[in-house]
Image (cartoon, rainbow, N blue to C red; front, top):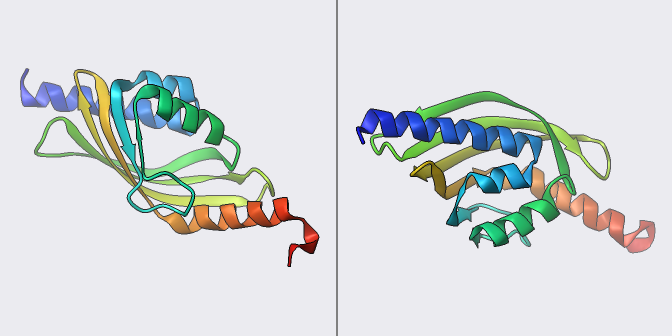
Length: 150
């Protein structure tokens, strides 16, 4: 297949991945993954796995995590970069939403490197800013510990 056709197909898959992620639709997200797909978070808070592999493991994590910490209202400033490798797409965007436990605002900056092969994501490296998620996790731990925890 010609590189420009592969790049266009990869971009289309990435756009659907972003939409499923924004809706926090774990089933739709995982349906876009290859059976042995890998998701990695090189920069992450303690307690968040660095790597998940396979649809079952990814679905279990995402289904448990989806909406339990934050809900996503919108993605802003989405920029999709095609690369010299037609299978690889780089995405930059800002996530805005709400913290589930407090209904406070949530903002996250993301850069993702996504490899698509044969119409399915085989690798998703999610370079998030870990600080907003660390704040949410700390607030959740404080809430779970109760007012007398200090």
